[in-house]
Image (cartoon, rainbow, N blue to C red):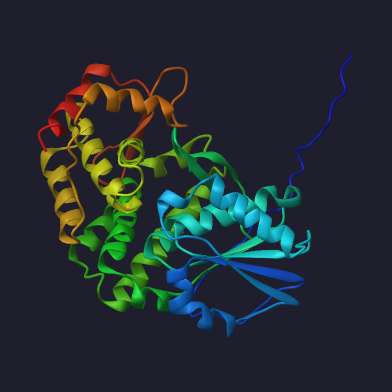
Length: 349
């Protein structure tokens, strides 16, 4: 006997990404702003002048990738229960990618799902983490291995928040902008080579184009069953680097920058990328002070760490490699010796 449950009529999960000065935001019911001490100290007053709800609470979590874990998640969930947050309430992720990922994941599991909105305050979270509905936490096995695809109700990207962003955090966001250009848009990459992202107007253009590119990919493939995997260019290597350094040495964008250079070396070995193209990408990363080298102390151990990544399947490692500038290849058919050759090259860093 079989009982069929037809679930093809999915709810509409569409939402808008607002790239402008933060408007007045009115929320029904209760709202909880989730932030960290640094962002709260700099910008909470500005947010509260724009945000209105029946009841409004603030929950502050520690700052840093090393706190994106189950302990922080449990603390956040406990505070939601303390405030008797109900299913008509809204969580407001007010911070960088760590805050956005944890807030979104909490929203996805609290009382089986409540609404949340993203108000990203770092360049990296504005162009990448806040868009697309990836939420989650890290554990000792790797990055974002516990999580869910859960879309926000809206994203508000206000360049105002970038005025207080440290240079290193800014560069980490630029890495993700460069990533988008390399895999999707050659003309955008060439524009970035000429542009100066310290210029407010040019930065706004770069943010808008990056968001447009990512939004188009997410619309085609919400849950990373196909083309959305292309957004992981540089990430397969980067996640191992972050794990091996306990998420405390490199910002995510810095690890991605190194991962892109490693992926480029692999692409060169396979004849997908020319030496000159690889140099152009590396020069652009280094112009913003991003690291491009990481000493792989044990290439065999580094290789084994790939299999803890959620992108590995059936003992095969999936890589996203640039196919020239402006195109990409997603493949799990790379020989172990080619991967190890790259890792041994980076043992010389």
